[in-house]
Amino acid sequence: MPIIGVVPSARMCDYEASMQRAGGELRVLDPMHDDPAGVVRDISGLLLTGGGDVHPQLFGEAPHETFVPAEPGRDEHEMALVTAAIDAGLPIFAICRGLQIMNVACGGSLVQDIPASIPGAVTHQVAMPKSAIAHEVWINRESLLWTILEERLEGEDTCSVNSRHHQSVKRIAPGFVVSATAPDGVIEAIERPDRAFCMGVQWHPENFWRTGEFRELFEGFLRAASERQRV
Ligand code: MN
Image 1 (cartoon, rainbow, N blue to C red):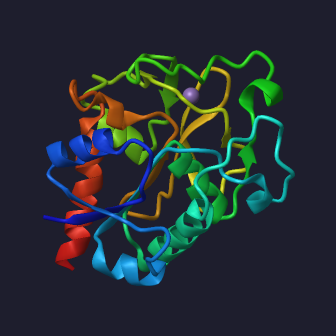
Image 2: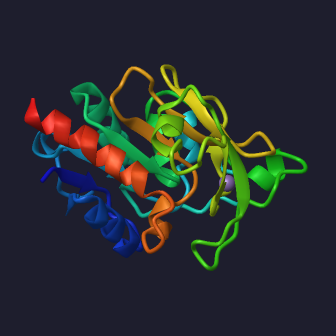
């Protein structure tokens, strides 16, 4: 069974349930004591979780008034983990804040606050219940995301997602492509086409483990992690 390293987040139970249902084992990483380069040698995949905002100084901006910091040390730990995982060719599945920190660690930037920056944006903050549908996304048919979800979507290229974010990708990191967008143009998923599985989604697929809407994403991530493990 592949061991997936997961960065700690305030609420881990849905990530754990989603990964367990897909057949993976999670190892919760330690931001204060882990050596990121050493960690990536011991795991077969990296799962980046949701949480507070990525600090704007990491992409050269002063924080907007709506900035909500993540736990101390979390930005630095995750930046180093992403860099080490990319260097090692490790599969990465990055969710919400995870997508954002992956984009910044790889040289991209973020919209700091969607309501302040994108007039007429749909609401990307629907707090409860966690699986409440907030908006549609359009999925790029050329993407791995599409390939993985195609059967479940029965050939459609839109799907409904939950949404709890006010940051989003502004400048996409070199090497990545956009794989899904919201109706207002907000980037909802990115991936690296040259990797077996290096994907970020802005919504929270882990909140659907009871009903399984995005189970294929966790299974695809684990498949990539298993294949890498065998090498
Ligand atoms: Mn959204």
